[in-house]
Image 1 (cartoon, one colour):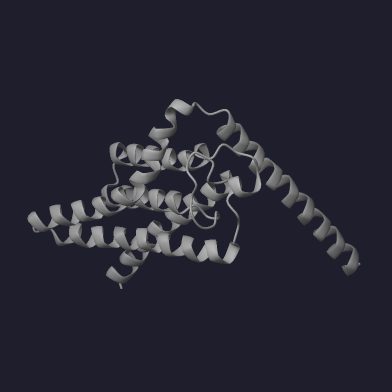
Image 2: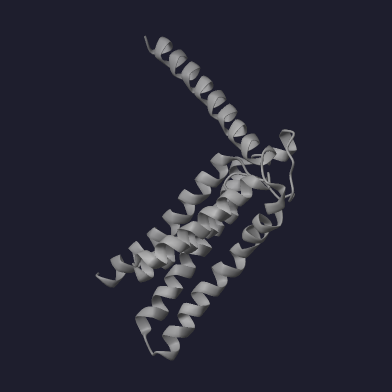
Length: 194
């Protein structure tokens, strides 16, 4: 009975993996090959904005807290920065462990921007979503959260538009980004209340 269940499990796992991979490339091809090429530079700009925004936001918030003499704001900016740094570190570790080739290296795509390194998870997406989540957790206002997550989602889409990431790469990157910032603020509250 155990052999039958093991065989059945392996069969289902292999078929699910193949289905997921086909769905992944089908979605990417639809986005990349049918894209409006007039928007390529816009999406490249969005992708390249990630590092600047991820640094500028905590520095700006910290500076504001400093001039207002508000230690909570300064502390929150540092916790937000820790979440973004954690997201970056986790994606680097994930890329080395998973070792997934970029889609344009495997499939025929129109890659506007050749990314460097491995594909899974998307570092740009992780950092963008970590930044958006940390801003949202710091200010807890809808008019801050919505533009932040629209920007992060645009960065994620840009990675597929440019042909450098699969949809699953950006999905995992988004989860890593949100989780790392959430965990940073959770730990801050945990140690503050201890």
